Image 1 (cartoon, one colour):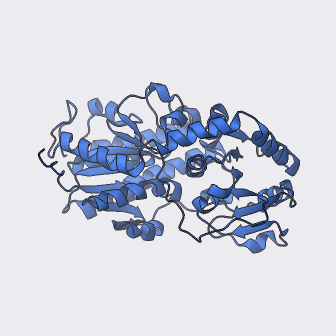
Image 2 (image 1 turned 60 degrees about the vertical axis):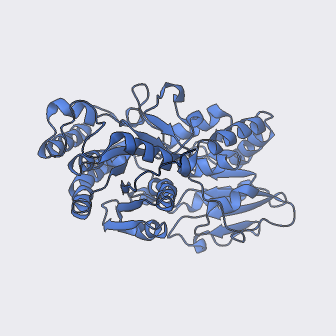
Image 3 (image 1 turned 45 degrees about the vertical axis):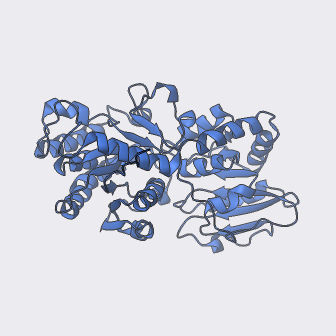
Length: 415
């Protein structure tokens, strides 16, 4: 048999949103691409440069306008709209120029952009004559389902203001009104989605433009964490990497688990000190941060905010979830947990130790829970992960070609 022809080496640029939960899923793809002989350049908030460089990728940095917004309070829809507008302006005024400055003399073959960086990513791909691929760290959108439509009021004046920013930005880079319809969609011709189709809302309506490659779970190294040796069950409690000051939440969780039966591991989020919870009961173990894959193989329950990264890690290990969503799309993900039979939801407004204890008990004693968890674990693990994503990028790039081959009709090339 003839030897398989190796694909030519690619240069892939990644434009992620300035948030750990958005950046983390792409790191597995970067590692896999580099292992396969390709180059990867990130245009990334300076806070995450170290994470990127650990993969072997190059980090081109900028200072994002995204600050401690989510740490300060549970944002209202109006606050979210204002923050979304500020970040949109940041992507076109900061992220896009940083990408062009770094990549014009070293153009990529592929631009991978987060769905929160859609304008900057698509226009950068056009100007750099590269293949655009959208990355979806949460639920993807198509003609049937739209996450943004669930979250945003189209009649909000801030939305119209944001649309004006996008129209002006695209117009300055040669994209006329006749093309803006395609550029304005919430999906691209090629989309990598970091969850299995089984967890996607309206998953059966998505066609082959969407590759549900699942999460990029990095399994823990031996010795990162060990469960208690006394036979007690383990609960992992977390509000993600940016939990903010949630002392009452963590204290409530500590009270919900009987110390005779449970050992509780809490991750407070970066920048939070365990001293804020002192004095701690002896059955509670607190960390500023601990990789969840170190604990989840031993955990009987995860209590979390319904962030997609946390959910996918839990389902990878078939750990049931009690979700206490904070804001944004998290409520939809929590609802999806219940629909899939792998979790329960508790309202933040109604949360107390008794409610949480009863919810945990109800989930763990439901006879349907183990089978649902096994099915979802299979879906997560068989989605393909980083290897499938890298192979798809190679195949897509080979068909797309350089300098416009394979582009949709009406695509006029670099501005």
